[in-house]
Length: 248
Length: 248
DNA sequence: CGTTGATTTGAGTAAGATCAAGTCGGGTGG
DNA sequence: CCACCCGACTTGATCTTACTCAAATCAACG
Image (cartoon, rainbow over all chains, first blue to last red; front, side):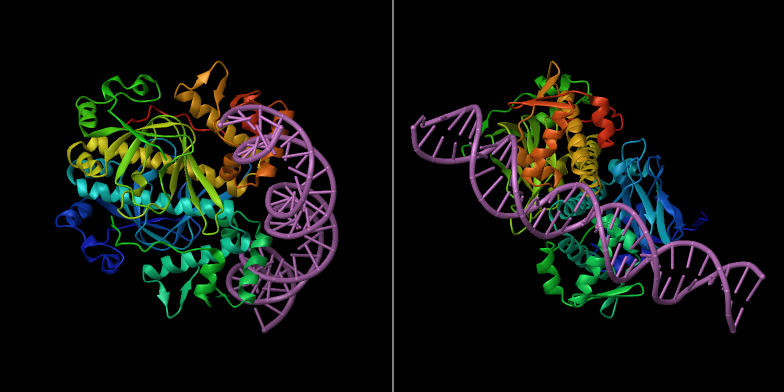
């Protein structure tokens, strides 16, 4: 897997920080983060960020691109746990040393800001506020997984699909990936199936059902929502309004 | 809901700390924790610890008893996200102020050690190592939810049941709830159904299938495992060996 | 005893899985 | 340029798992 490590992007110029969903960094924090940064890691489309069951010595922030977290059963069945977009952090949940209980794969070319694992400890020792931010990010991720669990456990296929699409659309839009009324959706139907706990065939038919009803449009990698209200109602999906989130 | 607030149990005498799965507290930490403790909260069986959608001003550690975390859809369908046993922490994931995205109910009479929410911030400011422990506990919980998601999304009913029972047995045993070869299982089949994303009827039949095969025994609230190896194989469930965990 | 909640059983149904062929592009090599 | 290949997507048919509906049993409890 051809990978690149590029010179670090200067955090003070980070394009993500200009987005309104991220809260501004406190004085000093940005310099601290920058000083601990170990460079960019570029993972190609479909590449492995963290292999399931291997221990990683880095943690990352997604600078650009899409990825996903997953687990597999010994016999190969895979469940996608959540998706990672710019601003998300990769690998704090593996805080305890030892093998990662999940894998992370890239959906698109992925640019990651890399940090040594023990940066976490430095943060806790010297920037309690930033440490709390990290914990916030971890807790936020858990919340996303909670939602997925609810979906997979208790929503019908159609409802799951509706909820997932609204979720992804909103998240992509919130990090500036909306172009007009559409966002790029770099997922194959196999990914969607693994995220929803469905077979590929049924995923296909379910997606078609939503299309037929005019609720969503999907065309060569882009997708847009035809009727947001109807999709939300169908999926019983309303995310709680989110205050600006930290960006590590 | 009749509730009690009792005088705090002295953390230095906490019976949980003697269990081998918990790592010893560093000097000073125990006094710190004790000094921030706001007393015991006793929640009766089936009582509400945190109502879904309400903001809680406390966080808790489970001293004794069982509870569970759940989410519901607007139409009432419920998904149990994970179970809480002695030593687990309740409510850090709601670190951001605002309504809790999940509810917590007691399965048995529950004894909780209560702390003010801003204790978290105090911890981060004054005991970085303890703060890291809190984050570890949060990350650990996420891992449990990851497992549930995998189960609900990709395991068959029988596999899910097998995996859940092994999981619960091991956890109960690890906090000293094993009596001989059995542990008390304070769940109704409705709880199991909501944890596995199944209907009650199917849960019942699935459980019977495991019983018929001699893999588990369940009798009036107690349960024991007939064939651990077979259950693990059936459920494709092997937890990773866990180092001693922090206890807040 | 009567009530209530939990568990169990039976019968019929439906959602979603599986199996098996397609189609439809976008490359690649000849 | 064209044949072919491969992966993603579709479609149809059939099968299974798990859901729903309905009712019976059972135990605890007042």
